[in-house]
Image (tube, rainbow, N blue to C red; front, side):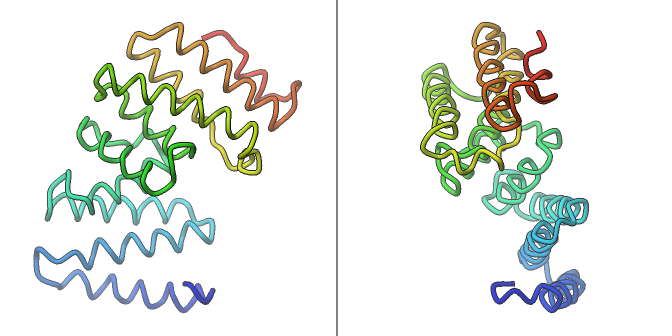
Length: 202
């Protein structure tokens, strides 16, 4: 994969995945290989296959090591970065996934914003204050010093607004929908469909 020979990498990983099925319990080989294969599929825009591999890794790790094991959390992160609607229900899993996203991608990443929204209900009031400040700083940064990353941001400010609304923070939710509107205007243009959708009342 590092050398760019993705065809050979895929062949090797698929073979390794088949062999890993027969390895004894308590070994992480199957999950590790599935995660790597998922990364390869994502690099080649085979997103459905990538999601399938992430799910296989998660299910395997959870069954062998438990839902809060670091390997399980790593697989969960891969899942929710692609499809947040498939997040596990456990507050502990969501919070650990947020912490992993912060450590891997940084406080001002869209990955941290997405996972913070998923984990919002599990934060204490003091933690929520910090998360709110971090999310606001991340959105401000991508419109300024981190603008080069704007084109790669999914609608995470809107996702965060939805999480706020579900937790009873209607005024804050409206503020973050306003931030999503600004992000869409800057990325797609003020008269774009994306900006229009973000401007619709919720």
